[in-house]
Image (cartoon, rainbow, N blue to C red; front, side):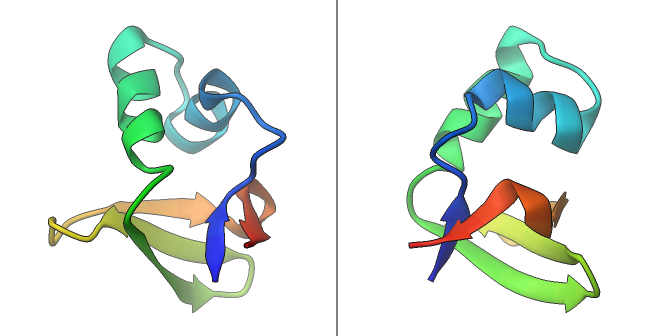
Length: 67
């Protein structure tokens, strides 16, 4: 099972995933640390979303790790 890398801070993932590190984007990343669905999209990329939502984000596989 994939999850966000535990060795990276929320602001580091926010910077790489969204291009900015605001309070709001860091709050989104914090929410993506639990109960998420991660699906492979294409070479080097995946999608990540909360279980309760239909929309999500594209994320680099470099920001993910096996649980």
